[in-house]
Length: 373
Image 1 (cartoon, rainbow, N blue to C red):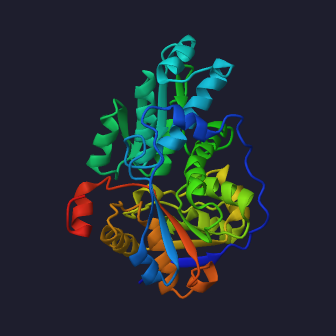
Image 2 (cartoon, rainbow, N blue to C red; image 1 turned 120 degrees about the vertical axis):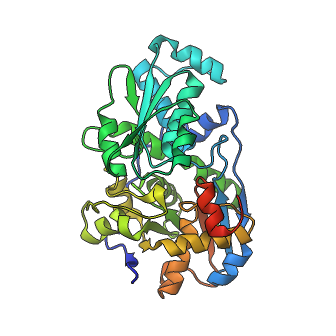
């Protein structure tokens, strides 16, 4: 029996966006080693099956050498956190310049909770700066993702419980010598997750550089809501007519349930979706008001749609993991449940989907798709 839901957001209104940083995240990211604009490609087969004019896919499957987009938010949040501690904006043009400017801060460690990609990105940024890292993960994380985090030099603590339990434990790691870089927020802890959300804006700036003003519908894989909040902030600043749609697993649809209730609602664990990057029972405190005001629709989908979309993307030559396929899966969920036209999937529509990760669990990818990534 399906547990899928589709909700027209009753709270939609003009959005007050988060503050714009003095230095843009895009300018910052361009200074980091390995920066390159990620591809924007067409998916004509998926467009034909959805009955829309175009499906444009932003491929976040190789960002700074990592198989997901999370380095954008993690790096910007780490940088802003260090600048705040330093007390002044450093003048730098290379990573060596930045490390020299940060030297007065001494030896630091970075900590984070993760369901995979964010924690690895924080660990990578720590390694680049010569810091230690401590990453907290839920106990259902597959070994391949844990090994990937350890490969960045991180200490990994497996927490008995859910992602939300890992978040709670990571918060206790904060000391004078350890900065917690979370992509979700809680009372009294707002700056680092705000900076994470700002960091993701590089994705949409890059999209605009190629197809500015052409997008009609954007489908957004949504966990705690930081990535979706970045998209809402960007598009409500630029074009209020774009249809913005969150996509969540059916058993972790905290944003949908919160929009339905008009207040933040927790979806209790267990969260067992294969879309592990979206297995979050609580929305981010800072992302929630942005999503409440700016989303048009919320969709909660079952796992079979994610697996089907992994295969659909593979036919287009795109390797996408379970979480990375969620945006496409949400579009087909809307189609099958009879609300495609209402959310903007009409014959003239240009649809933007962001594939947020590659095959971070290669064994499962091979099981689902039928070949190795």
